Length: 352
Image (cartoon, rainbow, N blue to C red):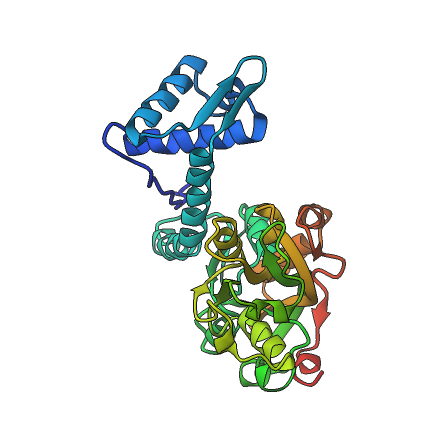
């Protein structure tokens, strides 16, 4: 059982005459055509023959009653508006389900891990959603298996204080006063170790061509907003900025509509269900959306001293400080790994 991995995927596109497995292949083809402008290249990337790929597209168009691909002599292929709609829906499904799949994968991995006879050390991580942390999980998987549960910064720190996890990931952006995370409630300088993980740009993710340039624009008539969940660090930033602008949240259409990750916010805007939301620059870039930078925040990893000094976490720190990790982080727009792995005195966070 040493090679066992728990991994979920979703097949959601189906219709009479279009089986779920064919729907999944169709989405891969459409994404390939959108990227390359060629059905031939898209078929090759999906490991299908051209004949099979074209038959699949024809089958889907007949089943769905809509043209999905336009073939142009001498100009390759391009997907139609209906095809683009399917890809946006697929992105939305993926972003909505990703945190739930990750949590269930980690839960099952813990259960099945009891059957293993060796392999990588394991650390149970509760953390605010972050793309660099997902990169670290992939990079460290052969040496330190990270079981990541994405939730808000506050919930992650509560889990650490209650000893329900080994490591907590949380972020701050210089938030002060009533909106600041009450770190002293969960962190004890004598009992916990903290390290600098990454810095990242946070701001407003907006539709391309949008005239949303500042926080006050969220209250304009006709502007639809998508918020983050209560207890997340990003939600606290939203509330602080609204207070500074003396904006009543009830004036913002969609303030009570919530998503649970940066990518889910970006997917909601990309799908046209909102005009703006708060998130990191990398999420906006992934969906080719506009971005209004507002703050640069620091993301930290915290754990009990015993875990901090243990072999598994120390090996993880070696990876965080490595060139391989910094190279991966450099590919994420708005991220900075210049101080990654640097120890931080917890008391400086409690009393900035």
